[in-house]
Length: 99
Image (tube, rainbow, N blue to C red):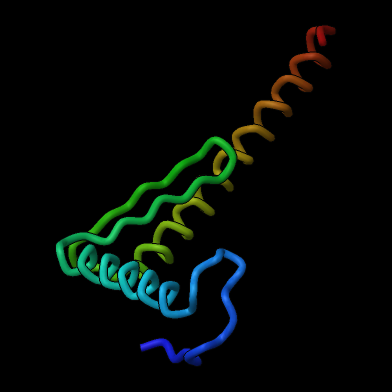
């Protein structure tokens, strides 16, 4: 339970602390229901790469760690591929006098 002081000022959103507290409780309950109902899901993006992962057994933290490692590996591979392509273009230009 989130503590609050009764009679405290109205927030920037125009809601009383009691209303904000109730809204937070509803959000927490919704998230708990989602996690109880089945699978955890994580989606990460870096540049034009995207990793989506889900599991009924793993926690969100475990999935986040796994997805983070995977996106890092994919990013490294993509950068290596781009560097190799640039080197080939440069070498081709030197050998054949092209661009």
